Amino acid sequence: MWLGNIVYEDREIDDERLELAADTDRLIYLGPNLTLRRCTVVVRVPTSRLILRQPRLIDCALELKQELRNHRGWVSASLKGCRLKGRMLGCDFGPFPGYMTGGEHGHVEDCDFSEARLDLCRFHGCDMRTLRLPRWPCFTILDPIGRGRELTSVKWPGSFRPVTLEGPYQEVPSVVATTFYAPAEAKRAGTTEEELKAAIERFDFIVH
Image 1 (cartoon, rainbow, N blue to C red):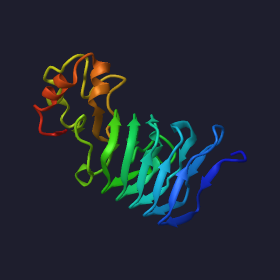
Image 2: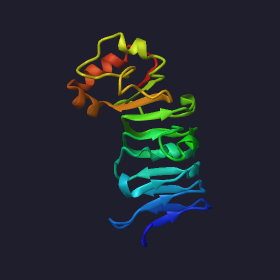
Image 3: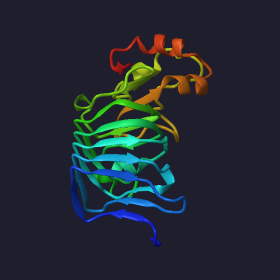
C-alpha cells in the first residue's frame, strides 16, 4: 500500500458514520480484523478502489453512491442485520470457498436488500429466508440449481436463460439464489420486461 490509502483494520467501530471517499489514485481497505457495529457506511468510490478483507458489519446501513460492478469481495465479508441501498451489478454475497482469499468466511444473514438494485448478483451458502429481497423490476430465483431441470424445461423469452447446468459456464454449487434487474436483462436478452414478468410468474420460487 502506498501513502494516501485509507485503511480501516484491527479495530471495532460503533455508532459512527464512515464516508468512504478518496482521491482517484487512492484505495480504501476494510479489514482485516475490522468490526463495524450500527454504523452508516457511505461508499463513494468505484469497485476498483474498494478492497474488502474479511470485515464484519453488524446492524449497519450501507449506502452505495455509485454502482459497484463485479465486486465479488463481498464473499469475504460477514454481514448481519445490515441494510443495503444502491446499485450493484455482478456482486456475490455469502461464503464462496476457493474463489478468493477469505472467501470461505463470507456470511450474510438477516439483511435487507429491499432498497438495493441488484443485477446478476448471486448469494452463496446462506439462508435466503433471513433476507429481504428487492421486488420488481428486480427478481430473484431461489435455489436455481435445485430447480434447474424445472427452469430449463420451459421456453423463456429472447435469449434469457435462468440457469446453466452444464458446460464451462455452469453455475457453481454454492449458489442458492440469483437476482436480476429486469430492464437490463430484457435488453441483454432481446426481449421486454413484460415478457420476462409473464415468464417468471409461472414459478412460485421466483421472488418478484
